[in-house]
Length: 70
Image 1 (cartoon, rainbow, N blue to C red):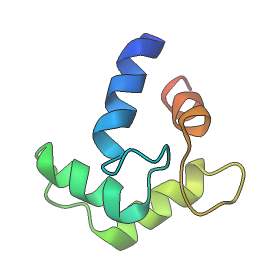
Image 2: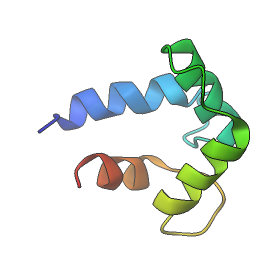
Image 3: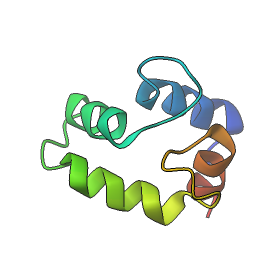
Image 4: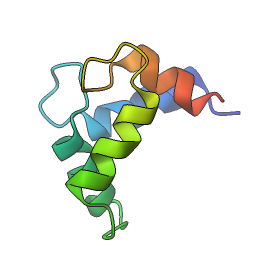
């Protein structure tokens, strides 16, 4: 299992503007930068929707952490 520190580092890579939220655009950009060039914004929106337990339209760290620990 990944450590909380490792998951936080990954979250920070996705959270491009450092506001504590991962948007679909940030998710798609980070995935592309990490080599997954198939991730589109609409795909990222669907992924975020599946993990966004608070229904805010973005992921905060707690949601990201919970999804990574499943």
